[in-house]
Length: 377
Ligand SMILES: [Zn+2]
Image (cartoon, rainbow, N blue to C red; front, top):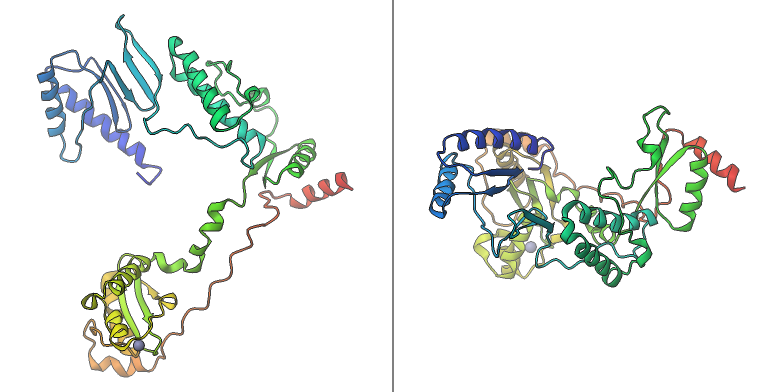
């Protein structure tokens, strides 16, 4: 489901599937609603007939298999709605939360633009109006209010319980709802840096420039920065693991180097010599493997070219005792010997400092800077 086209194709396929599967049945559900791969069904016939129905749709295509959940205590969750059979026969509905839900949202003291923080109660209240029936609305608003004020420390006045359910987009301004008579504003994206951001926003708005804020310096970007060190470790190809004595191990992998290196390290930890020639060499001679200097000599996707390159590199390098790979006819060896061993790649450039000041996504950067300068001086 990674491609943007996948849900569309999945829906086309599933529509065809359900049309043909349901048409070939003598007893059909009185309601069949589907969202992507979740289906909500009302079955008016007997339980054995229901089992037969499930067996029937599971025989229809080898790749499409359904599992079934039936109501418990007259209720069943579907997506994020809990549907309950009321005594009157009319289904009641309310917001559904999994039993493991912790009611933690973006904390009010998180460093974000106020509009981002305000969007949390707005979205939860809007959802309460959209998913709860009249009998459950007050209870849901009460739940959201308690969760936001007690766990997430939102001030009570930030939670507007009266958000009308019929408003099409709760955050849209009257200006956005107007027909496109005026040309769209220019938009600029700036990192949110607190009070200065509000001042700059006011100045730019006066110049008819719309400001959007991005958050910067997240813990995620700091903690994950080590990933910049080896950008190629996520690729397949022919790789080299050096030993302190100057000898190397040459290997090839069709997955990615990171995964393959983990396997070598596991063999090292378990002294599993048969699985790694470099581990065998290092442990026999009490040498140190230079794990951090391991790298891909060449990024290669195709198995056969990888095997050829591996054999060539084994021939060119002073390797630890290892399998010599694919057979290379001696006729090629004078040619291979002409080329010296590839030097290790230069260290990648340092990532830009995390505290970059401004990122402008606009063509009229000079105009904007001049405008800010005129207003600030
Ligand atoms: Zn060694």
